[in-house]
Image 1 (cartoon, one colour):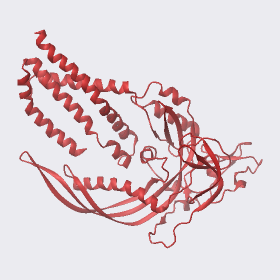
Image 2 (cartoon, chains in turn blue, brown; image 1 turned 60 degrees about the vertical axis):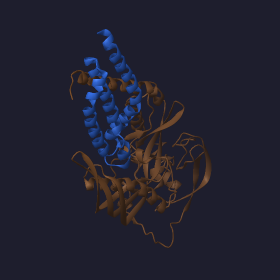
Image 3 (tube, one colour; image 1 turned 135 degrees about the vertical axis):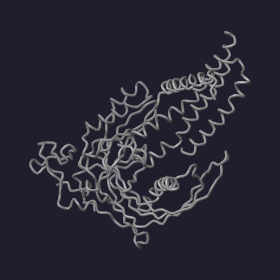
Image 4 (cartoon, chains in turn cyan, green; image 1 turned 90 degrees about the horizontal axis):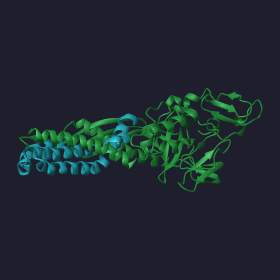
Length: 105
Length: 347
């Protein structure tokens, strides 16, 4: 049981490490958007430029969440190939959401 | 039109001492005896007057030579003048060393809004702004507490115009799990009223949008040496055509955003438009700002405080470790939710 869970646990840790590294620009953008919403004049050019590109935050969180769902499924079932196969539908839904986010960014 | 600098205006009527403009009382205050001289005149309301821009005018606007002490910065190229006395030998824009010149060619400002926020309030607001930054380096507050603000009148334009816009664009339609692109066109009109455009490259549009949320033309006063006494002022060096060019860049973004909202569909892209601009009115004005300089990680930065309303905005550094900490926390939440979702066998 311990050995079965070791690989998914290590993968989850690696995902946290990689997600953290990839998330630094996204967090910076999140702070810029927060500051723009609270400090810049709404609807001004500076506000529009600062808000623009916020979808990077959503993509980062969605990608991290998606990979984690596969690892969670793998940890619960012990079947990595099956977990990947079961994730396709989830991926399609996520891509739909990503497209909607990209359109509104 | 700009009045010449009359030294007598800056001399105290009671003791002949040097007068400086005091934002707290919004009047000239004698630095020797404290006597206060009001600067209001019956003509003050005329300062809000706008001027019609005629692109076909046969004679371009004439430059004037300001016979005054000009401080030219050797670092950023900024040129500022001091009325009454030079308060600093450093550039108010970048804190760099300046050289003194006696001539400066430019265009006369039509009006200005005098300082209303005193130095001590500006200092506090600039420091508060820096201290309230999320993910700022730990040593930043200490560095900023040693920095001082400098008062400066910055050249700005106000532009009015009416735009009749014809546009063409594409948008996306989702039908039966497929995405289609549709073309659309239309027209709309926009009116820009008192659009503030910095006439100095030292104040970026982003800083303008951070410190100037509202503009009240009734606060404009005719340009008088008394309002500038004790502060630095950068003169207008841009022609109206140059100002309109900068306005054009700003306007383009606002027009595109308005077109998107006008179409009101998903995935609007490939926007093209033609605009017929009419009724261009302008003012050359000076607006008061306080600038606080600080240096972090070998990089010079500034925080600007509006001298009218006291709003602060500026440049800031980030702490890489704090950014990584926030990223790690958010990643852990996303991973935790994902693991639980996957383990539960949901969708």
